[in-house]
Length: 339
Length: 297
Image (tube, rainbow over all chains, first blue to last red):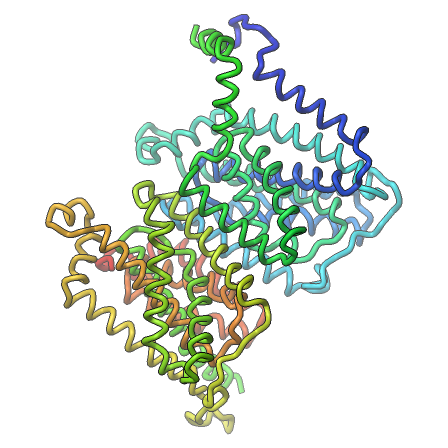
């Protein structure tokens, strides 16, 4: 590791230039596009990319399939709306509370299930998400039950994250996406990240090498849960209305998982790619087919097909292309890393 | 008053737990043989309900008389979905199983909603609301709903039948051998692929029959799948994965807890009650009540 950092390779490798170009394009889009509808879809794409990246921490890098993403989104969203509406507290200040609650919930689920291998964790996540939804529907004075909560509009106000249109959210989500990508990258090259990839490879072998698999899996799940609730907090402000059906449903958890799986499970760019493929595709399908049930059919079908035919997702197609376009440089970069 | 409330909800819980147990037995058989948790049982239950509805419209017979027809439809449906999807990832196993059965669950349930619409349909039945008086506690009547009782009895017959199948027939022996160790089973001349197919089709047929026996209790619509998505999974984990006795006991336990919570706290929290019970059991007995010691499948 330290060796690689000292070696003087070119600073501007294609691997660094391409993300910068993408970022530049993304930053310029609002100036070029007049349609607010398109901006809204792009904000949705970025939000799902962030959700997918958060899911990927435990589901992709750790191969522990979680189906309770929506629960953490809901925690972030409800903490934000309740405190902002009732006490006028800024969403930025509600973030730590949402994160703390998500951390606690992740600990409760993980503590019981990560000692066991197999599907126990997945089952427990579904159970937990359902429990939280029942609780949200039950505590009506606080959550308004199934009716949901509307965010009080306070004019164009950055501190309270209310704006007359979605353009400011475009930049907020873009910044959050870049931060999440950067954080995810740092996580994968951290000690926990390496341990996690060992566990994914062979859990028993990892344990025999002295890795405390239980602790590592729990840590990754806690991190994933906190990221999810941060994203949920901002996403809720963007939606301006939340209900158990929209933020705390099994449907949402599935969609988040599918985004990461289709893009490329356990890869940095996979969830981003997946979100930018699926969100517009579903939007299109909903326009053409009408009913919402049919777009859910598409999600289910895509999940089944991808597991059968492309278990690694769509990203490998792009990386193969990348290797073709930059063969020499890539080889040099690899060589540099080895030296 | 309180004693009566408890007695009535325990009774209701035992009877509704029977349905959970039947789905649970289906899940546990599949798990025992191929080590796959079938997250899609609720979706197959929905299709079982729609098959019952369609055959009922077609023939006009009562739901219980349609059992053979629904079984045949479901065997075909289960076989096609198995060959088309799960069969292709058997070699990969593990995570793929979770992803593909959850995908199937989501796909099949929403497919039913797209094909048949969201309007609740009903299978006519003369016994829908009939019930009989079991006795009185403190002057208040303890009532048994006839459809619930029949559902329970059908469940018992089916579970006994499955037990007979597993212990007394060649196919059952082959399934148990595969459950123990697929490699050795193959060496002994068992076609494990056939056993997997049989186990899966048997498991989802039990889910479909659960759908049939609840038609007098629920409207036929895709969202019923949500009701039966979680509870049967809890049942199987509670009882111990792969144990039929466990699924039976777990089913009753889950049914009773759900009814007690619904009666004494709030109907909204019935599912939450099951989930909390499940988390507690995971902490205390990670492998369930009958886990490990019991023979798988």
